[in-house]
Image (cartoon, rainbow, N blue to C red; front, side):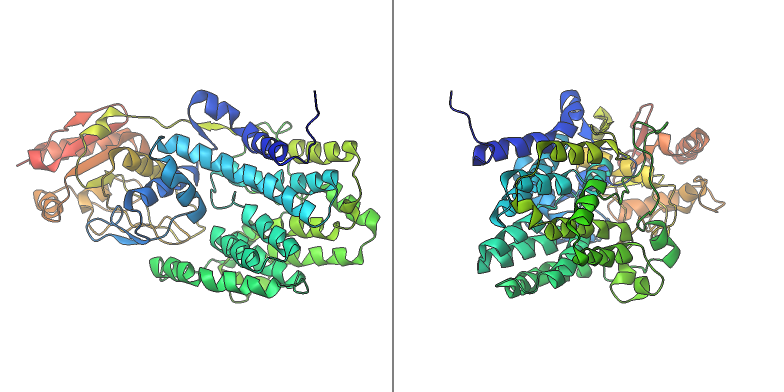
Length: 494
């Protein structure tokens, strides 16, 4: 039987699919969602779903901010576009998982192909691909549901096109890198400064120019982004300490923040004695949120400086390009891969977040006010209502109706203009002293609100009892009650 070479395109595709998909196996077998659902995962799924609901509209949504709607931009435009056709055939949970799989697989495959285009050996290109694709910073994005972060493949596509000296390809690659995420855009612009001598690299600026309409839509959707306090940026900067590997940690990691760079890669650079390795200090300095640097324009808007670290890994691979033209010993690839997997603070198989499907949502066929609603907090400040956001969004992509919530850029700030003061008074995080009144509920009906959905597990049980009692005094009884929710229909009251 003829042996298929590892450089065969089909073999490269197969290996990339396996590398991209192995962390998703538990979630796929369970039919649930891969990742930890404390922060970004549910909003990321919601973002994909919302984009499909209102396509081709971009920059505005009627799903939030009822009754007026609001400016909005998807958390990840690339995931939204990938998930658009998938949602014709699969649930949002399956669509999200498949998009994650595709994004991870493309990262391995395209960075390998880029390495080969730069004349790296087969084994050298695989080492480069694994150094980037297995990096804990990218895995951390998948772990926490930071869906825009997993799309590192456009950077690989740009490098590939630079090697091929394709003018159009260079522009397209850079356009996709800029529009992938704010952080990949920043890293790509930084790396552009280091490859300015490459032939036709100036066509990258056409990609940047082409991205301007989307950048304009983003800032139009969030016209007044709040500045990030210096202490918040420093808390999310590159950590010079060594985090415990997952197998030594006694508890599950909650956040996907990691700035780990392969020690194997750095040792290879040291052995190569490349003085240009000092260039790695540039993204490290940016990511460390140094006081003077982090206050400069643009840099002061970066909430998570540790995300510059993807540029450190990519630059390290670039600096090793000549070394990687020679064959690399298999044991070295094994050492690098093992290091990145087992020195990571994240387990190699992604945790599972179950999405509870509830029949109560099938009764909702009009605009909804969620109680308790979300709290207004400055970006970066602890917000105890993040889990409320997960409940709110997961309910909405099941009942498909507009809701009274207005998120802002870089935070979970929500307006409470239309929420009755009496309902706010029941929330332990609000300082109010009032009761729900018939006039307030009438005001909700006048703006077209139909349902009040109470998330019983998101606040003290006594608050649900008090709300039910006050609503009953006015003449409203729950349309349906479950262990997790109460549903009031404003059309059935007095």
